[in-house]
Structure formats: C-alpha cells, structure tokens
Length: 84
Image (cartoon, rainbow, N blue to C red; front, side, top):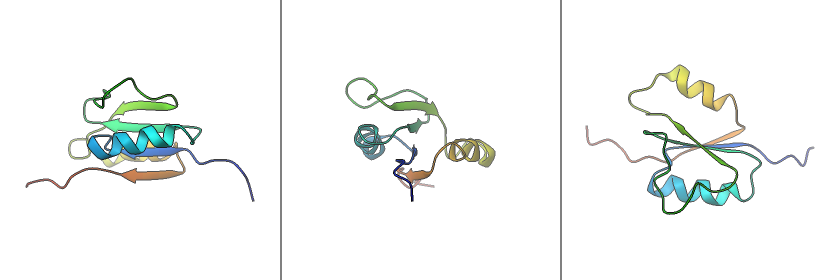
C-alpha cells in the first residue's frame, strides 16, 4: 500500500466544482480544474496546486476528455444538466 495522495480532475469548475477544486488543492498533489473558457471564475485567485484548463463537455471530443483523465487518478464531474 502506498501513502501517495491521488491527483484529481474537476470536470466543470463552476459554482460547485470551483469550491471542490479549492478544497482539493489544499490536500492533493495536483488538481486539474476545467472550465469552458479555461479561466478561473470563482472569487479570488486560482488556488495553489490547481491548474485550470479549457474543456467543454458538450463541444469537445471524448479524446480531449480522455487526455485529461489519463493524467489523474480520480475525477469529479461537477456540471449542471443541460436544458436541452
């Protein structure tokens, strides 16, 4: 068994996901937080340990998602359902 802490991806760092990323950044060795624009929209600066990337769950390809997931051990999907 290892004591290594897992790297984490937050797919959808909006209202809920940005808070998850902020908290995870304090304990995880690496956090990738995605937004549709690739910009941090939550109040304050991007938290230490958090890397923000552009990813649009609707517009981008499955390969784009797989490339992010290949870099982490755990992923949390935090986005609202579409109105469509």
